Image (cartoon, rainbow over all chains, first blue to last red; front, side):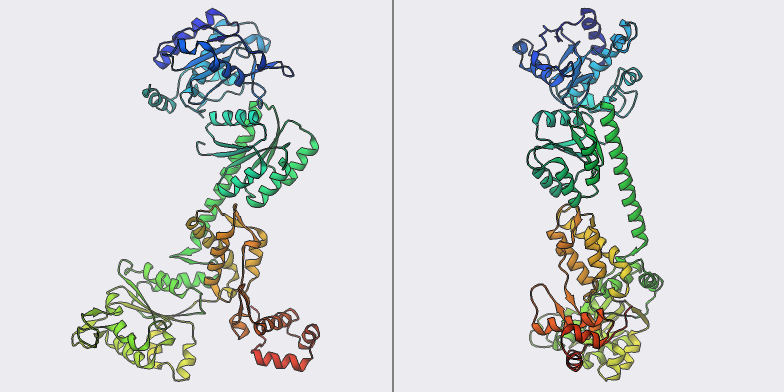
Length: 177
Length: 456
């Protein structure tokens, strides 16, 4: 579910890998605008918890009763009241997750754009936040997608899939649906 | 780190939620409260691995929270979190005992580092505990606890003699743990799976002692409606422990001597000979040699019982064991009472070490048990301890001033002894301090049986 303007190619591009990893179908959803109250003027960023709340409050929810998990995607640079930035945020064991593209593109780090790299990074963060919605917490294995990335290098270093420790936990959580 | 418990105190809901959500994603068990007072209650009631404290809060601010928590749970690492970072407040927070200091909003890398530091700190503490436990094991043997030379010697003796059948006589003041030594011998021996039967010779009336020890046949006396096995028989091939053997009457001493010589006895009113298979351990807080001289204890029985003598020293003669014993009882009663006490404050430990312990290990155990009940947080404080102040056996009066009350005479005795001790038994100087003349002081010392004793 896009929040604000998000490139269609990216929205489409992440669906197949997510379906393959989780084994569930995905549905592209109608987007919503970024709520103005999420803006942090002093930091020129947006509060991720306000965006998550806007997703949960949206009127369209009843149109997608079959959707167990809803992933928001935004280009807004996200932050929380206590953290200077986040790549994404999710309700632990809840329905909603959210990722930001702002710091996933090479241009944020003064490098030329790289669409392929952006797609891979986006998939990793999407799978990571969806993992949280299934109740998974951060993993200590650097190659696991649930590893907590504190910078873009960490994102690049980790894999797109769950490690052998996290996967059984996820599978068990998915059984209840 | 799935079971690492973090307590957050912040008056702003959005901050609490944000920090909690983020830490939960990292797998921590998080509880957030909105005031310093609530945080202190939580620290008192439960065990935590880290406390994140907001600096600016209405009412009790973060510095005050850190100050108070430090008193209750000094080992709990605290991170001061604030939106108003200044060098002054950082320095003050660290001075009060905060482990780290971070300014909101913080870089994810920064918090990760702070938390990792805490985990490392926790692991170090756990390692210390493990090392202490390993050391404690070295100083413990079958519930016998002591690192000092005297207790180590007793432990060695117990291990050496455990498997022999020789009679053992354990001597020592009340409360020194004579029965613990007897049980240790039993546990260390090959008889450990067999019964350990304790008989308190002072507790059983003389008229009943014989039937209690030897048992009786049906119809042996009025009321003997069925055959009963006595304690000697109940002990089977285990251990029979005669506590307070010095209180046994001369008549029973004759019976017991015969049993020890012949290794067999008859039930009261019975004909059948029953074999004594148990090992005999006796204990007394009396000077048996003196009782022998006074004709109150049979010499032949004394030598029969005293094949292996073990003397358990009073606690004041093994002060090096006080901290070890106190920690042992602290652990035991914390578990029993569902508390999270881990240690004594330096002031509380000083009190324990300075006390004379006239009631020995039993008194120490009782004091620690009482303290555990009233203490909160992770430390027993000096004010949690109610120590009985008395002369103890060395003063010759055995007077003890309990917190429940004491007579004026008792208080006078204790006070005179204290002043004398403080002035190195200089009667002239002491009488001046007490405001009485030397003759009166001598008179009172005689009256109360106060006499100079050699300090250990």
